[in-house]
Length: 154
Image (tube, rainbow, N blue to C red; front, side, top):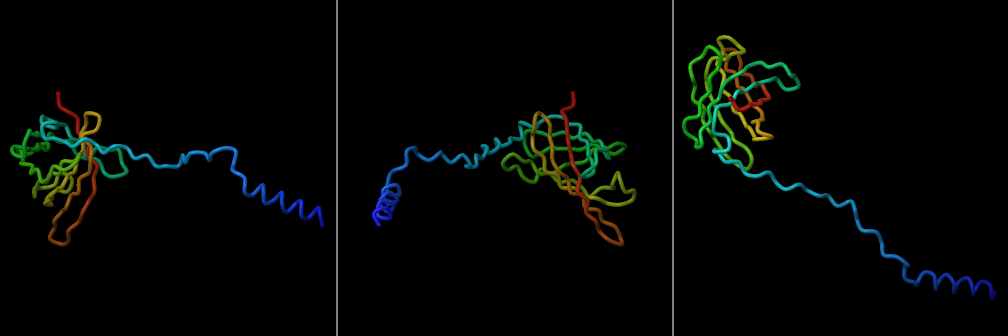
């Protein structure tokens, strides 16, 4: 009986004592990177050589020249063998510039009209982003998603 009392007292003392060390700091906290700097149209003003690729493919489908200005007016695009076309700046928000062009005859689908909506961001001196091409035909409409990368023309 004395042994049982002694063990019970030892257990109570051990359970009520303070820990010797403080618990380790929580190292699982998620560190979020700072948001990207807002883009200004002056940052992208100039002439750009744009290459368009299908998603998941590195083959260049179309190469075009785009001229961007420091405001929303005067943006243009030149496709091979075509006259210069206007490009509408739809939105400048956060780190992105959204543009639209068309409808015009598709370079990839002869005789089919296409309108595009492109969103680009300035990354490491290049414009990178995505284009959604909307094709209109007499039988049906279709949508294709493409990747865009542009470098400043010398």
